[in-house]
Image 1 (cartoon, rainbow, N blue to C red):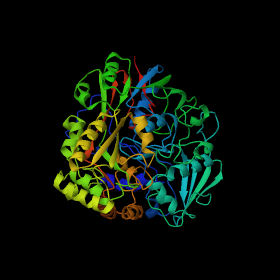
Image 2: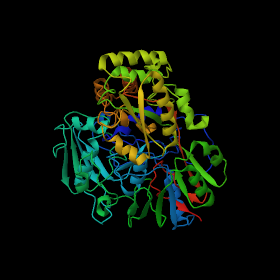
Image 3: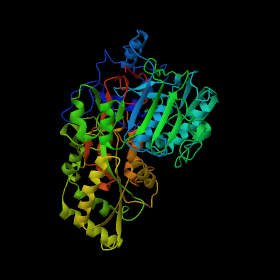
Image 4: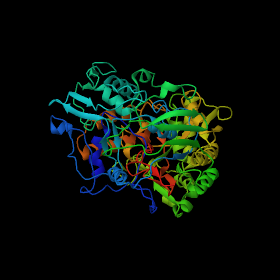
Length: 583
């Protein structure tokens, strides 16, 4: 139950990270099936914390900070001992085209990965999925739990040399909280219940307060890796609009992270230089040790493999499933298998046919999980799983399990007939619009299986198959699609308020009021038993109302040449700090 006890801490200022992590290793053994990572022993795990908040312990729930060094601190010690070769340009192959590096505007994984190079944050996740302080000098809570005061550390600066201020944090928080369930729930509980200066008040350049009308127990650990810190002028951009429209526009992407974006050719290449003078507090100090990072977009897996083998590519994210076994056994490669996430079939609830429950149930009844998950490669990388918050974790629930993996075309057609009767849908002429992409092979393969299956039910289907950058642009338009293939939500987001696609404001735009009410209840629960009960109720409603569909869980992997070191000594984050090359 260790991870369950961490959940209140992970929700904090309600900030979300929608990806997964696992311990790094240069030659890890492949797991028999994706599992939650094992937590380190308490005697060896570090927990770098800001000053302990004052106030009522039952509200603050602040853990005691262990003192053992983190993996990153060990790497830093190597640097001090002269064991690191600084310099060089690290070439990183990204798996899909990037349309924007605005991590609020889109959930695209490639956007989050490239964004972490540029944007900094006030807390970060470590390999044990615990938040570590990156930006606070201290914080305090009043005894009644209604007012929190946060003080920023003094040496955080933007790429143009100006200091990060409390106003920048306020505006960044407002923009992020406009999209994410955790932020939505938190803002509802503030004094004004909205994005106002009375909800988050700027005291001075380094200090702000969060003002609540009722205690918010899950606010015990500060800020997570989102929201990313933006300049206030940039964060004023509407959350549903990109902060830039035509690629790199200079100051638009000024932030405070470890790298400065010097050049971006959309669809091809990023070039980053170190942010001179930048330091990170976590883990016990972060540094940039290379002269720069060039990101090249390499969606073709044959090209990616050749680049890794010849040394033209140093590091790659999301290696292909069919190359996993060969790369795992290659002595010239290092690999990190991530903890599991969930493939997702998004359903658009805002228009016909998706606004009809019987249509959604017809798709749910037709799902053949074994067949859909098999596209994820060797058995070490996937498993069927009924739990929307992942099997083998404290989020696992059996609620609604009978509606998972039905693979029943007869039942699917019964729901189809009920849908046609209530909606007037014309099976001969009306078309279901499905969007998928060629950048992620598993998305493409699952979409081909599903389109054939849905045609068997009797629906007339149209498939838009494009690259990932174009697909996520189409996804923004509520009128453009009915079904969208994607993936999401590993260990750090396996609960009702951290899960991106259970937010009523994100893609799919579900209107399940039961889930919305339960999300608020989850943030009030203080016990494992209370949270487990809410998870059961959320999962039951998820299956009853078919918010979206997931056939199971799968793990991806990162791979790098053995001449690259330290990429994941601290976390799964792709910031490439404390990373060096010996070539």
